[in-house]
Amino acid sequence: MEIKYTIEDSAVRVALIGELDTPATIEIQPEIDTLLSYASRPIYIDCSQLTYIASSGLRQMIAFYKKSASEGGKLVLQNVTPDVMEIFSVTNFDKVFCFE
Image (cartoon, rainbow, N blue to C red; front, side):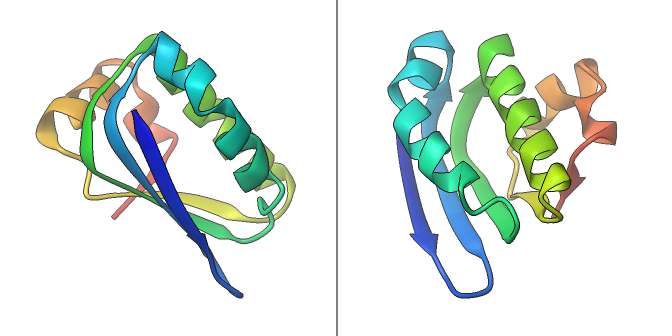
């Protein structure tokens, strides 16, 4: 799993690359902690290269969403692949997140 991000004046742009499974959520936690400090800004997560998301990854996304909402920011998932979107749909998280 790889995470790339840029912090702009008005937004944070994140790209998730690979599989967001349990080992990956542990591996990227330091980057997530950094990104959470910018939760008051809009955060755009490009999921075009995210090939899989496990329940641990979904939990991390929900935590990210809640922190962003509590800080007055917003979290937007972009370019979600059909396979990953199916996981969001099956878990009904497609009704929680904002997608572009």
